[in-house]
Image 1 (tube, helix red, strand yellow):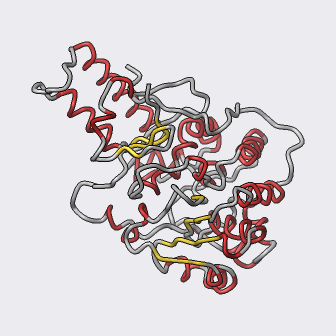
Image 2 (cartoon, one colour):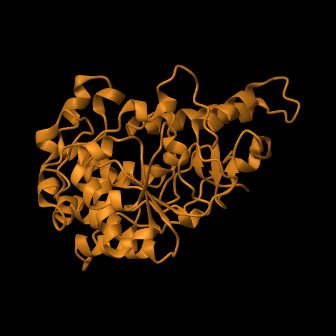
Length: 353
């Protein structure tokens, strides 16, 4: 059996085409198989819509109870049940402990940096404990410098740093270096997503302001999407195999997840959308992260609004052609499924059917 940690929509669509092709010379699929495939794909799309994820996303259940089309594996992250945890360290201590954990892997660390509060918090945590030559900072363009010039002058400018130049999804090197981001912080600490980008109606704007509605949805969405957030930034890497131990998104951390659970259970979360016209309310969110940053820069910590990536930074998404990323899927041993080897992964051992 082949299991995956990342599955692209291109791989999903390849399977649909493969099964529907009546002249398939490799394998003949009976009507029962085709019906079950269609049913599972519809079920997955239903859940993606329910969780306000884009239709090209994929789901991976942290608790390994719910399955979808492809075999997925979560062995690389411990199962954490939704429950209150007593005697957790302070958030600041958890942040530093996480930075030390990543540092002690003894490899160079590549941080995808936006200049927003999540990646700035990661930057300061790593810079606090890591030797300077261990850190490498990747930016989509010069926006992070414009957003937070003091951070560039104080920290980033003294480290190895590059601009991705239109290949944000292909700049990491997870075959030999640690890859980290701040992406999971939104999911953990109060983001309700992009309601009018994904739902297109005023009802969802109202619901996104409904604390009870958001609280009820938080764990179902988190358990199915927490493990899937940062793999999207590896969609165009050019390696044949990555070391999965190098995949270390900063907030993908058991104690940070437990800390977030405690906050949700205690109803201490301040909810926010990911839309950038909500500056005033956003400044009141993610206060634990802001308090951590205040150790290094109080003005930025308590005044920085929402940062969003410019569309042109994600160059591949701005041209009127289908996406042509190299990575179709990543198996649970780190093998990259691409257009050269895809036929090795067009067999029923890859599926839950």
